[in-house]
Image 1 (spheres, rainbow, N blue to C red):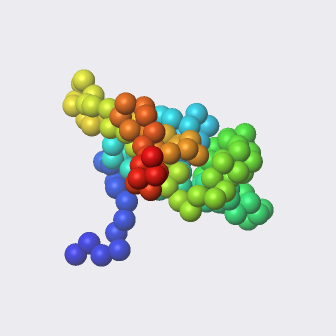
Image 2 (image 1 turned 90 degrees about the vertical axis):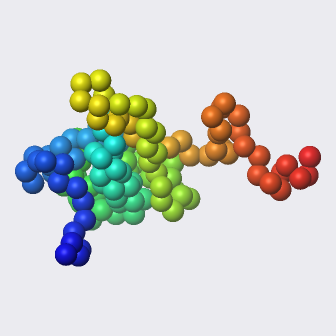
Image 3 (image 1 turned 180 degrees about the vertical axis):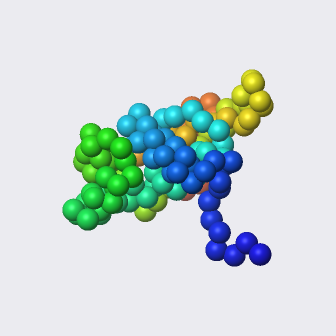
Length: 139
């Protein structure tokens, strides 16, 4: 039985996997968009959302927990200053995964994982903002 087991191993040793996730989360929070495989992105999403939540807490203990994961101090400053303010009123869901096709060499499913831009209505595929049903009825 597989009770209480969470996370993917991704065919890596524990130390390799943790180092890779720390590097990728640092890059994601610094550049706000990275290109990777879908299974890695789904794991990184957990770590990135945890870091933004720590940034929203804003106390010293949270900053030290973030420094234990994020590899660059300037990225920790960004999380606690810019990102915490950007997502102040959002209760979660700070990242978006957009599938972009398959890698040419081994046909691995690839995607973009990015931090969402706060504010505004969600855009449809043509770039137009969607109207809520209440707004559509009023017009």
